[in-house]
Image (cartoon, rainbow, N blue to C red):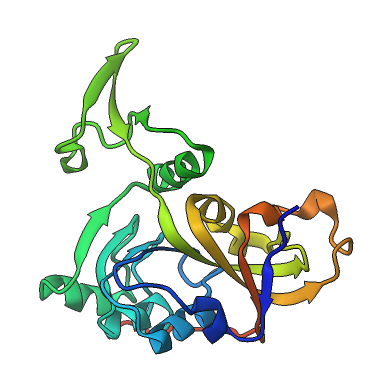
Length: 231
């Protein structure tokens, strides 16, 4: 059976992430964002990254800090702009970062397809909009669909509540969001957790991500981030 590597620090956990990597980053806004792993990635220095996430950063922390450090070439996300997305806004308007907008359901399904080995799928979302440009369109039972391809990651950085020493993961409430699907879609999945327990101490019915999808784990001190009002 698969056993994840338990590491002593976030810096060890992100070691080896290469320039130009595609990195899937969990989180729904600030909920479930792997802040310690992102901070470690900034220190590690990898650049020219393609980031896949629900948002394009909040305030000056997490993904926004990675963007501000000039490490990101392209962002694939569903919600690139909100009241606290000033870092991304400034970079995008200056032509310093590329953007691909992916409807939220498609974002999740495209990553799920990568994890499930599905080559492509048809979806009606975005038909007749600018997001349909360049995509194959097909009519099925009188309804138009677009062909969508999987989103695969070289790495996934996600946050979970608890892990056991095998690498099985339990999430806390809405912090679960994209973590489980991203874990399946990446070649290497790196997880920060609040607590690591011995195998057998997690309720198997509560495990959302089985250890086979987890490669590296680091236990971090729980921290709570807030974002000040818009500039």
